Length: 116
Image (tube, rainbow, N blue to C red; front, top):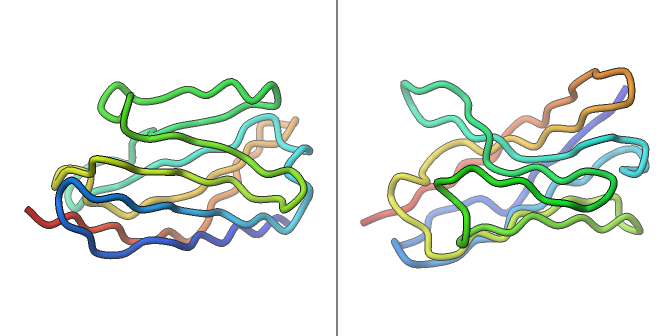
């Protein structure tokens, strides 16, 4: 079983920054893809950013140029640096990992609230 534990969420003013981290219970190099999704109240869960084994990132259009995903294989963590935050970025952010058999593993989520 895989455990993913997110941290780093909180309350920030618009224009501010937060850094989310996701710690995996297994070597993250075992996963084909890791990433972040978010879910705002009353909305569907949506992709924020992913990173593959080749470390090539993929971003939702709404966060391009503001967010940056990275991974630390030595620490088995994936991070999401969020800059220039907007109120519409308010959501619960979930870490996800997909293994070679296309199984998805999810963290419990961390709340990000951006005040205007």
